Amino acid sequence: MAIIEVDHVTKEFQLGQLTSLKQAALNTARRLTGRPVEERKPFKALDDISFSVEEGEVLGIIGHNGAGKSTLLKLLANISKPTRGSVRVHGKVAPLIEVGAGLVGDLTGRENIYLNGSILGISKAEINRKFDDIVAFAELEEFIDTPIKRYSSGMQVRLGFSIATSVESDILIVDEVLAVGDLAFQRKCMDRIDSVIREKRSTVLLVTHNIRHVERICSRAILMDHGQLRSDGEPNLVCNEFYQLSEETVRRHHAEAHKGRHETTGDLELVEAQVLDADGLPTETIPCDAPVTIRLVYEAHAAIDRPVFGVGIQTPDFLNIATTHSVPEQTTLHLAPGRHEVRFSFARFPLMPGVYCIRTGVAAGNLYTTLFYAESVATVRVEPREIIHAESLREGFIPMEGNWSILPTDTPSPSLAAQAA
Image 1 (cartoon, rainbow, N blue to C red):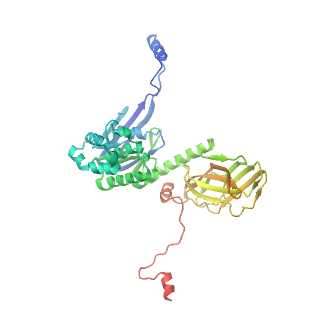
Image 2 (spheres, rainbow, N blue to C red):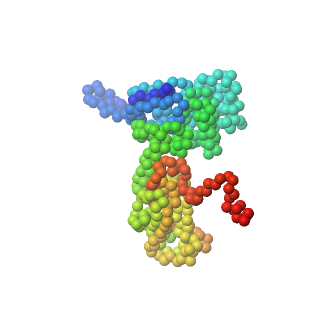
Image 3 (cartoon, rainbow, N blue to C red):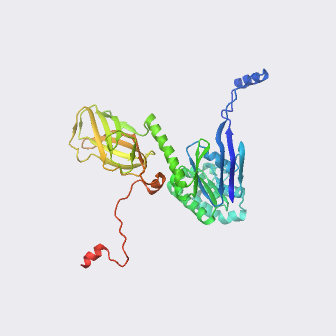
């Protein structure tokens, strides 16, 4: 049985509703004289969306910023109404949509627990029974009698999440608010959601930019794109499509302007950065495990003694994955003024499918003083050969190579057999 039904829903907003007094007077004059008044075109946050959610499903809702995810959740939580279409929700909903949503700043944490609990349909006796657990999970024992307007955003999220997940609800709606908490609390929240899924069998709607969470815990995913439902199905396949959209955006942004740190003393500058394929040709896409060469051209404005060149690989969100330096092979090299080409070659590019950015730096002298450093000087997309992209990212960044041995339990290991001999 469908516990949530969304039928041809459209949600429109009128952008720029406020006008100056002069413009309002002019518009009134136009209306009185029968002349047309320019109407602003409404913005469609959701455009003819239809889907249903079965009882007990764990649905991940993903998409870029502004895709309509949070707007959709507000309709499902009955916080706002659709412009057209219908939304039917059967059961009690526990929403956690915005930081501090439903919390009253002038009330203490204790008072907010009882207020929000009653709003969500929890009896006072049940709140009394769960009160200590709510406070302990939120880690707010010392601040529970402090007005929450003095709480940080992270403290408010912890309190709101603890209250929402303590409710015996049919549907739990969780927006991206978990990103506000620290890493330890995010993990704690995911464990709580796992418990809700496994033990309470609640229907869960999860909006997050952490795609690995969707792949790990969701039974189904939908991809939103500019207010439309672009894809609906198995999490791995939907996440794979989202990765491809994101990768195209990363590459387009990189072509427009380099992002990330860029530092130089002026002694030298990076003139060119390329990724070369197995044939030595510039490329932005390589197969998994293929040979790759990173080509860098530097312009030295002064003589540089004992330069050390570095090359690194990072994710588009600047997570450093690997780094290599020219030490100790080239520590005695003297770099004269002028242009110099530096290459670093991989016999096999060591990372799983995905989009990666190249960073580079140059140091010199006995103290390895940094002369130049830049991130995202080039990008490369590694394409899968036999495994789908989403599946490979769930497994990690680096393929593990080795040999498997499966032996009967009554057969001694090779090392023990050698000792016995």
